[in-house]
Length: 74
Image (cartoon, rainbow, N blue to C red):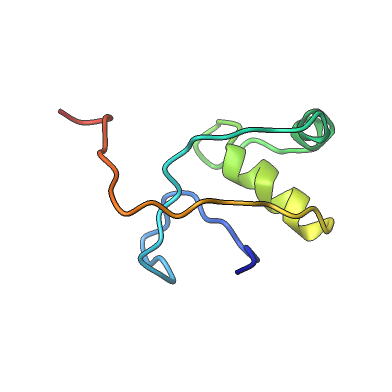
């Protein structure tokens, strides 16, 4: 499986796969972050940075898990 697009809080996600936000980066991330624009919410989104890297041909690895717990809202 290959990641071809990553979305941030989209209203109509193209799949039931979720990014639960545990990352391990190489130093390449710093150059990509420096080229990331602020989102409409006025924030730098890591998903935008990852999408830039995908578009540049970087391979983004992932591991599927069978269960996750949303800790944002009790």
